[in-house]
Length: 317
Image 1: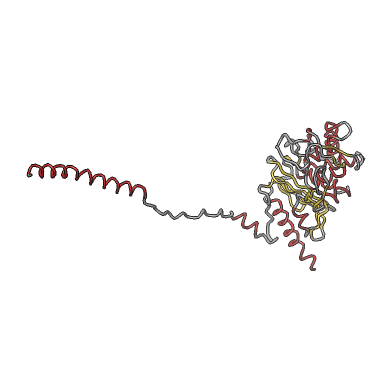
Image 2 (image 1 turned 90 degrees about the vertical axis):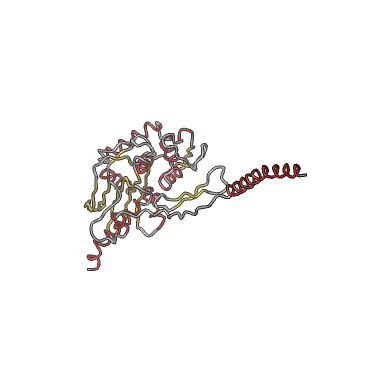
C-alpha cells in the first residue's frame, strides 16, 4: 500500500511542472494575442504659409509698387503707346496658345469660306504633349466653328484643322504666319505650328503687344475671343456641347475686355494677353510665364487695382 502511494505521489510530482508550464504558455499566448496598443497623437500637417511677397500681393490694394508673379509682363496704352509697366519685355519665351491669335488672323486674311466643312483627322492629334480633345477623329465642323473653338476654348485640334485646310497645307500656313509676323514688325517672333503646342513658337512681350494690337483690328477675333461660352453641335452627340472661354475674367463679366487669349504649356508657363479698358484707358496687357493656375488672373486683378488707384484722383478731380 505504501509502495503504491509513493508511486502515485512521484507521478503527480513529475506532472505538476508540466501543468504549470502549459498554463504559463497559455497565459503567454493570451497576452501575445492582445498586444498593448500605444496611442500616438499625430500632429496635423502644418499648412504652407505664404511668403511675405505672396501675402503682400494678395492684399495689394493698388497703392505702392506693382508686383507681378508673371516673369515677363508689359502694359501699354493702346492709343498713345505709353508704357505703363514693363518687366523682361525683350526676353524670348514660348507663347503656347497665344499663337492662336496669329492662326486666326492668317485664316481671316485668306478670305476662306467660313461655311466650308473641315474634318478632324489623325493628323490633328497632339503627339507632342498628349493633350486630349472633345473633338473626336472624324468630327466635321464649319471653318467658322473651328475658329470659334480655337479662340474661345483653345481647342488644339480645331487650330490644327484650320492650318491643315489652308491652301498648300500646314507648311504654307506656317509660312504665312511668319510672313505676317514680319509684316507686323514682330522681329523676335517665330512660329512652327498653328496650335502653340510646340515650344519653338516663341516671341517677346514687346512683340505680343504688336500681335494684340493687330488682332484687335479684326471684329471677328474681338467678338469670338470675348465670348464667355459657345454651344456647338457635334456629330454623334445627343445634345450640343458647351465650350467655355479659357479666360475666367471673360466669364466673370465684371471686366471690359475687347480681346483675350490664354496659353499654357510647361515650357511657357501660364500666359494671358488682353485688350481691356480700365479707368477709361484702352490697355494692352501681356502676361507671360506665370507659375500656378491662378497667378496670371491674380496679376491681371492687381494691374486693374493699380491702374484704378493711380487714376482715381484725376477722375475725381
